[in-house]
Length: 166
Image (cartoon, rainbow, N blue to C red; front, side):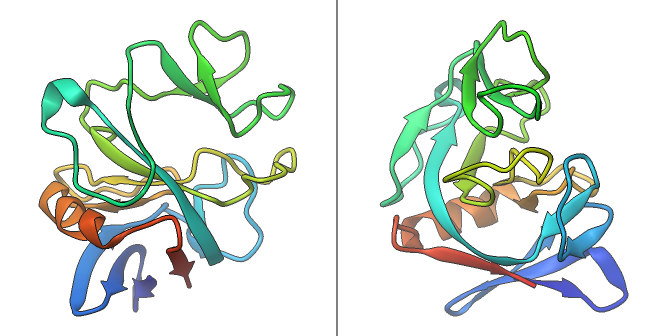
């Protein structure tokens, strides 16, 4: 995955013969990711798992571990919390990303293994490959694909896959 020249918040994700347009964070691809900087972290990261909204469509076909989200699912983005960069059940006392969203961005998503195994505080959290906003607007630091492109990509993915950003 790389940024389009002259458009730091837009990129191209290449997977075999597929070349898919994607949205990135407004700061573009960054080498030193920090919580809330709007950057998409450069590097190679494992794809951990897939999540989806079962009430908005069928279970996507993928070889990744997959789970249907529920209304009380969240993802902790609070560096002061022990659950930093981990899924949480709502309500949660610290800051969090709501996984059950009205805007459809998390109807399907993949957890990217950035700062995941042993999260370092303030280094960035909740980095996903998810559904792009209809206008293609930048993400908060994730990688986003059009819904049809994400569904086309998912059958190619397994737990042995990595995403190279940058």
